[in-house]
Image (cartoon, rainbow, N blue to C red; front, side, top):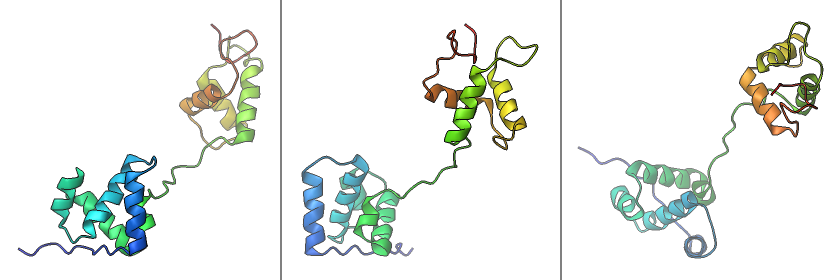
Length: 157
């Protein structure tokens, strides 16, 4: 059985000095410290299993850090890549509209606004294309409005 190809980690003297200083001084995230130690050990031509045992992680992590260093450089290997995530459904204008709606009088036949009613009204007024009541709850929670107080029309106590 052939052994898997390992990406070579070659550090310049300046990079090595910076990584040693990074791991011994200052405050940094644990992930970044682990990756720096992986790079230092991998630059000594150690196998993935040895590096993983010394650092306390799995071989796949060592291989992934080696690959990122070989393809994108030392800085890319140390830092997390940005995680895009989904765009928020409510922007500032939409949130302001939601708060104003929650503070207004409830629809006829209702004692108070519910999260579902607010979500349905936002869709009906075309403020957003779709929205769940949970998103409405989180948006209201982030505001300084106080659901359930006498001043707010969002909920009754």
